[in-house]
Image (cartoon, rainbow, N blue to C red; front, side, top):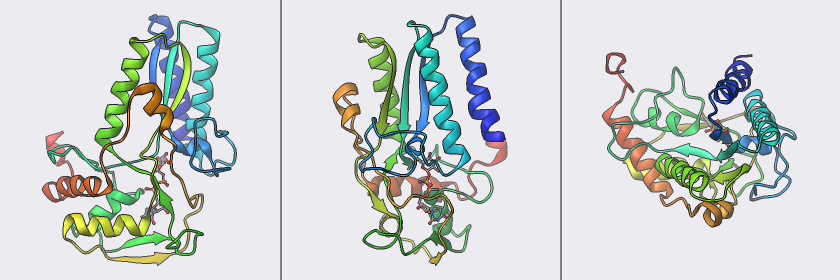
Length: 251
Ligand SMILES: O=c1ccn([C@@H]2O[C@H](COP(=O)(O)OP(=O)(O)O[C@H]3O[C@H](CO)[C@@H](O)[C@H](O)[C@H]3O)[C@@H](O)[C@H]2O)c(=O)[nH]1
């Protein structure tokens, strides 16, 4: 219910306030989860969405995309770009801004970095028998600063071209790495050992996800520049400088 409240109802409220104030341009933070289980890979923007999405979060992202499409169809003054993020990781290279999830992290990279820094004991790798080269799931990890630059390029497109209506772009590198490959890359970048053990699969995980990012390259003049090592290095810099994340009185 919280996802529906925040993502769907919250977005609808935002659209209404924007409409009332005649603000009709929006970059929407969407997600590769809208594609659900892949019918083909890599995911292109015209891969069907909304089918077999295995978690409520993903469905709310999909419903909000549909809502935003309907809004742009009803009024040609709306310009909406939906950016479908793959797996954002990394941190600002300064080590000052990073990811500090509340409680135990759900996502892989912050979990790895908290094991490396000693905050958590062991990484549980969910599944070792997927149909992938090493048996672990494959994801398209993208550095957070590349993702941020994608937004600037989308804004540029929106306001400096004949852009109208609604359009989606994948923001990914176009290359997949397995969970184990990310663990190894993190160990290399941090110089720390990451203890892990294999556990059962996590409900709803798809085996392989990676982007076809050519549309963003052609239309937005954007490509991800940072590699997996830089993602791990910058995550580690943030984590090692801030082992307890943001101290509460700093916020
Ligand atoms: O402790 C952990 C956490 C994750 N994983 C695995 O690591 C992979 C990546 O998991 P995670 O980092 O949770 O990312 P996804 O499940 O791929 O989902 C992310 O990527 C989506 C876009 O594809 C976003 O919409 C979601 O918000 C974001 O959580 C999956 O195979 C997980 O099974 C583990 O093995 N152990």
